[in-house]
Length: 162
Figure (cartoon, rainbow, N blue to C red):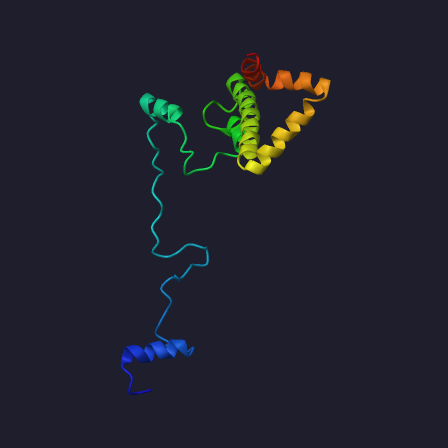
């Protein structure tokens, strides 16, 4: 082993589990009894960011989300935005309106997410269409489907009235 260069000798010692006594790990620093680190600098005052301008707020409010590469928020995130978001004060009528609107938005998102899930795979869509056709054979269900699916019902009536 003595024929090896000094760099390789240190490497083989490390691989063999032998540590040299003069080496200290670089990531460890001494800590005083009171928990402070000697020689560490104290953090400076926090820098408050400037509030966004009206143009920046409008741009962020009216820019559509990147749905191509990012997923949409969960329903819990939508409701929590109304509960705890920074768009309105923490209490008062504006917060109550934000909470109510977040539940309305979560309901709309739930309907859209279910529609997306059904139409995501051809097998799911085929089964859903089959269930709607079977349900339309029952008179009470047909009346409910007419109300719930009125745009589709109107299109079907227009196409079949010829």
